[in-house]
Amino acid sequence: MARPKMLKLPEVLDEIDMSRAAFYRMRARGKAPRLSKLPNGHLRVSRADLDAWWAACEQSAA
Image: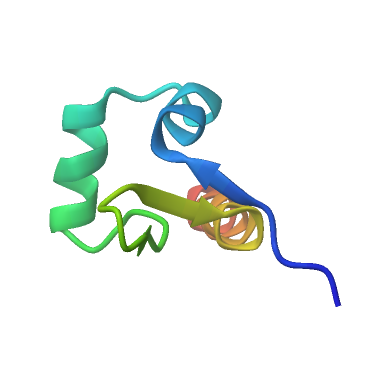
């Protein structure tokens, strides 16, 4: 089984066209995609979680 693709936070921010500050505000409200923290402290978002978050955003906008 292949490991899920993990995106770096700057890649996620570029894809969703959002500033880091705005992303952290959304995260504080519980509205951001789930983050994983690596042992070295870096943050990652799985492609599946980001895609699910996008789908949820589209449904709530409709």
